[in-house]
Image (cartoon, rainbow, N blue to C red; front, side, top):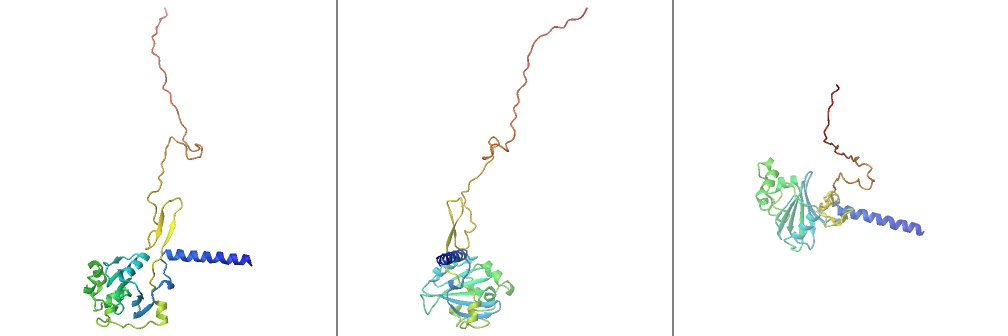
Amino acid sequence: MKKRLAHGLKLMLVLSLVMSLLSACGAPSVQDTYPLESVSGSGNSTSYVYRASDRTVPEVAQELSDQRQPDQISAENTERMFLVYQDEYYHLQQDPNKPEDTLVEVDSKEYVRQNYDSSFLQGYLTATLIGNLFDSFGGRGYGNYRGYTNKDTYKPSAGSYRAPTSNDKKLAPPITVDRKGTITRRGSDKDSSVGSGGGLFNRNKDQSKGSIDRNKSSGGLGGLFDPPKKSYKKPKTRVGGGRIKRRR
C-alpha cells in the first residue's frame, strides 16, 4: 500500500513538472484563458471577445506580450491598444460600461481586412503594416468598423456579435496569461528566463574559449597525440692548413 502511494505521489510530481514546463514555454491551455463573451464571423474571418476583469489595458497588454512577443505593439494607452501577431490582431479596449475591465478582441487577419476602417488603424499601426494588410483592397478596407466597444455605432460589414455557444468556446483561440519559468544551463552561472517566447535557447555570452598550443600536451592524454619533437644540431666545421707533396 505504501509503495503504491509513493508511486502515485511520484507520478503526480512528474505530471506537475511537465505542465509547468509547457506553461513556461508558452503553450496555450484552456484553463489559462479569460472568459469568452462574444463571437462574430465565420470561416477564416472571425472575431472573439474576452473579458479581463479588474485589469487595465496596459496590464493586459503586458501580460500577453510577456507570454508571446508580438510582431508589433501600439503605444501604451489606457483606453485602446493593438498587439499584432502573424495571423491575429489583439484589440484591447477599456469597457465603457465597466471601466475597470478590459475587453480583449481577437480578430483574424481576414476579419480585420474585411471590416476595419484603415484610417482608424493609422493611429495605432505602422503605415507599412496597414499597406500590406489592405493591399488586395487597393490600400483601404471596405468596412467602417472600429472595435467591439463601438460595434453599435460602427457595425461590422458582415455578420454581428452574439453570445458564444459551447461549440464556439471550443473553437475560440485561448488567451494565455503570464507564466514564467527558469531553465539553468549546465556549467553556467547564469539563468535563461523563459517568458515572451524568448530565452529558451539563449546562450550565456560569457562562455569559455579554448585554444590550441602546439607546445603543450593534449589535455590529459599524456602527450599521446603530440607531434614528435626533432632537434637539429649545426654541423661543426674546422679551418686548417695543409701541404701537398709531389712524388719525385
